[in-house]
Image (tube, rainbow, N blue to C red; front, side):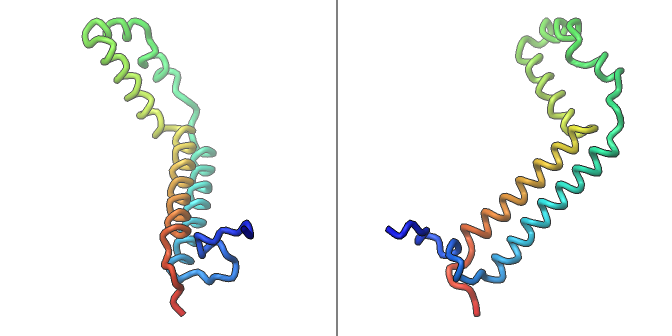
Length: 123
């Protein structure tokens, strides 16, 4: 009834972290900062969007009608999904993708260090 988290020994400030746990926390911080720095550099260096790409994309109604006639609604949906996924790896959206992937990697390292660390630190 003390309100403390007695289930996780890593939550108590007097408990020492194992060397593996320290390395995973460090890897978490490095992954976060490296991802954010890389995303900032990519965002600053990204070229302006090309108008020709937008003109000949899936958004063209004639292309959608022809694609629907040939392959049905599923083909149109898959073409839109493919274009969205392909768009994640170009220009400024690549910077957002790198930032999110860096944050996910950092969160995974932190999660592993916090919940799956050794029960007893090695002295």
